[in-house]
Image 1: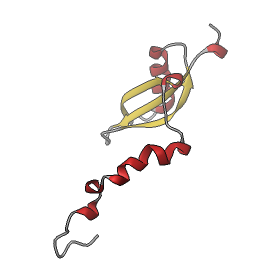
Image 2 (image 1 turned 180 degrees about the vertical axis):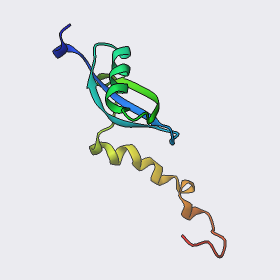
Image 3 (image 1 turned 120 degrees about the vertical axis):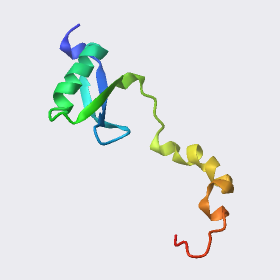
Length: 94
């Protein structure tokens, strides 16, 4: 397998001061182990990371921005999920 055939990996890093992993970039690597090692070298140079996730870009499924309406509209019919459904006590500013 040549370098041109290496799959693309998306890299997520959890910082020392965070609870969630954040997407920091992408890289090419032949396997997950090398992707993690390369991600460490490229994206955590100042010892700021405590955890690294790598995911093959081809394995990510995502919605399209064009699907926003059909995908998220059903939540609008559930008024109990909106804060306007509940009476707010006096003195609470929104």
